[in-house]
Image (cartoon, rainbow, N blue to C red):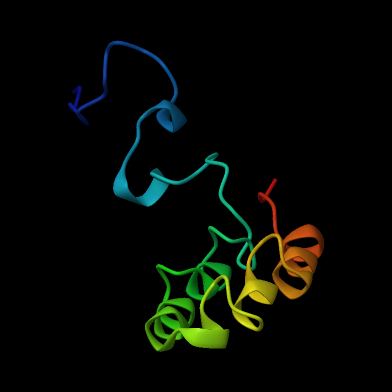
Length: 89
């Protein structure tokens, strides 16, 4: 007696089928501290911390004395980006 288990007749491997559980598998993602990562993004003008500093303005703005140090070209932000940023392998 043969049972049908909904086997896909077209062949291929199960890993070829994208599901919500496997949607991000194999994708290149930024590290957490990268300017595009989960933590580093918060320090950009679009993030919670950098956005608040931009609203306050003055020395905390991205071109201010303090704020420019936290950009990817600044001394603090640049060091973090160089040492802890980049993409996950």
